[in-house]
Amino acid sequence: PAPRTVLLTGAAGGLGTLMRGLLPAYGYELRLLDARPIEGEPDAITADLADRDALREAVRGVDAIVHLAGISLESTFDKILKANIEGLYNLYEAAREEGVRRIVFASSNHAIGYTPRPADGDPRVPVDTHRRPDTYYGLSKSFGEDLAQFYWDKFGQETVSVRIGSCFMEPTNVRMMSVWLSPGDGARLFDAAIRAEGVGHTVVYGSSDNTRVWWDLSSARALGYEPQDDSEQFAEKLLAEFGELDPENPDHTRMGGHFVTNPPIWPY
Ligand code: NAI
Ligand code: 15L
Image (cartoon, rainbow, N blue to C red):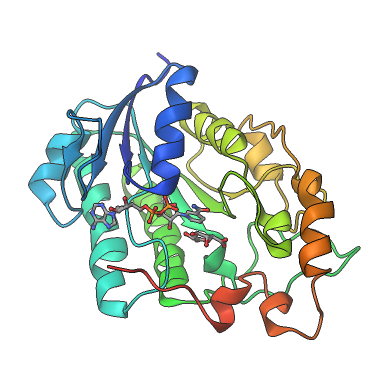
């Protein structure tokens, strides 16, 4: 039977809020979880990824998990260890114990952030490129992809690791035109990642069909993802404001952009 009930972790966050709005149209019944309470969602589970009992209860009976919870920016190694590394392990253990077969893991482009930005005409970066995290945050996502592979090889636990670019309403700088994932395409991609059969552990890039895309989207398309959006609609405005990417500027020469040089810090 097609998956119906989905646990959405990190449901209070930016992406979680967008997906809470969009995924029900694909026929899913969402169970929500976050460390923070969610306004207007009295049934949401308020639990930290450190709470193994709460996770076990939260995953019980769902068909799939879309795992967005965690620290989404740079922080200290100790905080990242707790939320993104131990927290991820706790979630996978809960899923394994409760027999939830499919996890969609919100990895990040920052797992490969030190990779040089492809120049015009260079081939698109494949998913099997050597990982080069640009932050402790990116390092935790790199670990997450390894953990997902291990749980597939060892326990047959399936994951689609989505190396998300920038999923926001609009791109706000020139780099984001290459890595933008429109919210609508984000929902299409998560839906494909939940539904596709026989994924084992599959790594995909999460971006729209951007004219300036840096990444090879073929593994995402193989899941059935058909992106509909292109950031080029914002090019005129953004280029007038910022100009083209500067090959001398270290913020522009690596795919991770300013995470390489001056990452935004998680505020809590
Ligand atoms: P966000 O910071 O807005 O949301 C993350 C949510 O996780 C927050 O609501 C927070 O309360 C919750 N959380 C943090 N630690 C937790 C813990 N220990 N236990 C339970 N909940 C916890 O981040 P955003 O932008 O919504 O991103 C969601 C996920 O997608 C993150 O894993 C992020 O790394 C990943 N991602 C997002 C991108 C984007 O463009 N928004 C790009 C690449 C990756
Ligand atoms: C990420 O991994 C962050 O979670 C998100 O807030 C954005 O900064 C995104 O990468 C990006 O690269 O733009």
